Image 1 (cartoon, protein in one colour):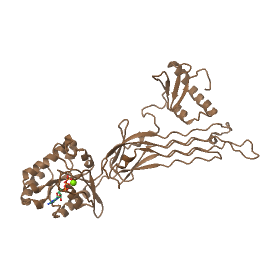
Image 2 (image 1 turned 135 degrees about the vertical axis):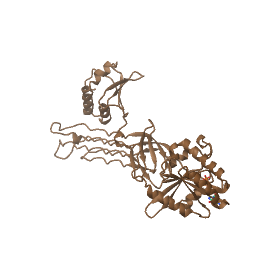
Image 3 (image 1 turned 120 degrees about the vertical axis):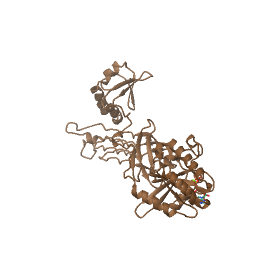
Length: 438
Ligand SMILES: Nc1nc2c(ncn2[C@@H]2O[C@H](COP(=O)(O)OP(=O)(O)OP(=O)(O)O)[C@@H](O)[C@H]2O)c(=O)[nH]1
Ligand SMILES: [Mg+2]
C-alpha cells in the first residue's frame, strides 16, 4: 500500500434530532398532556489508533466524514435514537492538528488511544419536558443542535523502539529482515526502500519494534535523494542502529560515510544526534580484513560513546549477537508507559464551533460590510440554534431573551435601524425595534 504520512480531512458530528411538540390524543381525553419526545444526540466522529495500519493512505480515497444524525423525537413521549459514532481508524503515532489555527489537539500513540474529533449535536427537547405545574400546555419544543465541524491535519510519526539509519544500499532492510518478522524489499541498488518498514522482534517477555527508513545521502537535508522527512519516523525511537557498509575495505572511507549521515541527521533534528546509537559494520563477508578494520573503527566510535559491532546479514555472522544487544537495550530502557501525549489536554477541548477565545457572557455587536449586524453572545447564539422559531411560543421565548440582554438597545446604539439585517448564529432577520415580540 502507498505510504502517506500527512493528510487533511474534514469531520462533522451528526446533528441532534429535533424535539417534538405533541399532545396526547385519546378517546374520552380531549385535553391530553404534552407528550413530545426528545431528539436523539448526533453521532460523534472519533479517531482511534490501531496497530495494523502503518500509513494514512486510506484517507486519500475519502476525506470528508459525517456521523449519523440523531432521530427526531415523536409523539407518545418517544425519544429519538442517538446517531451512531463514526469511528475512523488511524495508525499508532498519528498526531492530530487543527488545520485552521495549526494547534495540536491529540497524539494517538498506543493501540486504542482515541479522540473525539467532532462532537455530535445535542438533541432538542420535546415539549413534554417543559411541562410544569405553572406551564401545563407548553406549545414549543427545541431543535437539535448542529454537529461540530472541524478541519484537521493528520501527521504520522511512526512509533518504534529502534530506528535503522545509514546510506542507501548499506543493508538496513537486510538487517531488519534478519532480526525481525519483516520481509522488506531488498535489492542491490540504492533507494530500494521508498517508505518506512516496521518489523517486530519477539522476545520471551516483550516485543521490540524496529523501523527501517530510506537511506540518507549527502544533501538530504536540502531534499536530495528521498529527502529527509522520513527521519520523522525515527524521532520517537529510543535507540538507533547506524548501518555502515564494510565492503569498501578502508576505515577512513567508512568513517566518512558515518559522518555524512550523522551531519544530515543533525541538521534535521539535533536531538537525534544524542539518541543512544550502536554502529554496525555490515557486509563483513565482503571485507577481506574485517577484524583489522574493526580494530580501527571500534575505538573511534567508543570515543563518541558508541558501541561498534560487525555483522553480515548475508551469512548471519553476529546476527544473534545483535539480537541480544537489542533485547538487552529494550529490557534496560523500557518503553515509557502512557508516553507523553503532546497535546491531549481534555480541558482544551471546546465543544461547539464557537471561537475558542470568545468569552461566555460578553455581548458584542459587529457591524457587517453590507450594512447588517451580527450579535455575538454565546447564550443567545445557542438559543437561536436550539429554539424552533417556526413555533410561536419559541419566538416569544427568544424575544424575551433578547430583551433580557438588551439586544435591541445595543443594536440601536451600534447604528441599526428599522429593516437592518441582523444575524445571530445561523438565524437572520430584519430588525424591527418597535415590535415587542418579533
Ligand atoms: N554480501 C552481503 N550483501 C549484503 C549484506 N547485507 C545486505 N547485502 C546486500 O546489499 C544490497 C542492499 O541491501 P538492502 O538491505 O536493500 O540495503 P538498504 O540499506 O536497505 O538499501 P536502501 O533501502 O536502498 O537504502 C542487497 O543486494 C543485499 O542483498 C551482507 O551482509 N553481505
Ligand atoms: Mg532498504
